[in-house]
Length: 440
Image 1 (tube, helix red, strand yellow):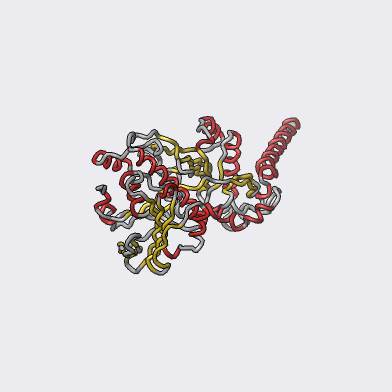
Image 2 (image 1 turned 135 degrees about the vertical axis):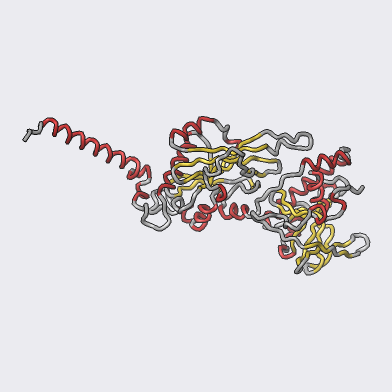
């Protein structure tokens, strides 16, 4: 029997021990180190529905954007919903390690973050670094509606959504843009023809089915599952905003066609009135939003937006609508406190209620209250000079404040009117020939 060389055996044992030691060091560094979430290594598979892989993907993504100074914040509704339930506890707890991965380990395909466009230059270095970390990424672009208008309908393309995929989890990064009116907007997610439809399950995304508009966010920094993240300061308010965030862009092409037939009134009086009416509208919206009262642009004000992307200069007032069940007794004192005195109060809460307030230079704000019946809705109207009452009956169209279609499929907006959305307000325009032909 051939004798075994002792030096060979010793070398093999030394090599094996070294490899094993290196493996232990690697395992400790990436799985057991408190810096990398040792607390969660014990939890993998310990509770139904938990997935530590997601946590590691989110951690890598947050490290990536932090290194490149990209200030993202969490807007994932499923995670924010869990955070909202424990918000007081999370807000008051120290930054120490959590006993379990409760928020980022719940099984799901995506985790959604947001980015304000003006806080980042969309530099390619981020994507090169992401690729080195093992991420695959996708950018979705479309035309910038802020650059579209009646004079130029060729908006340049801007990034609207990014998706970073690693292992079996993906990060959806929604890009928000500031728009005039003191709110932020995100665009729809529309895939180009060449895009790989199997890259991720796009239909499961929470954002992108339609454009959305939100209040400018106030952010709060929290430690969630031992990861430092920014979230909306009021998670419940953000989640409530999601339910009525659908945004309808102004119909620039139709408006341009309208003004080709009926030139816009560019007189000094018309310009001044539009300015005052917009100021009044913003003040009214702020007052009603502070009261938690849902409202919509009504009558001529909505008609102006729908037909000509503007305020009708000869209307001489601003019209809002509110469902009577949303009426609050605080409305009148709140408007008076905002500097809008009450001019008229017609009808009763149970019948044909209507309020009129006075803005700057006696520009009126009319608030009509709508009543729902089984197959239609109506609002009362009273002629100020004669006291005559009117009761317009409108074909009932359900106002849906979520991701479902705003218009019922059976409705023809050119005949029945339009229910639409401008920022956070549902809009209603009365339907007559006024939709296409102005009345002087």
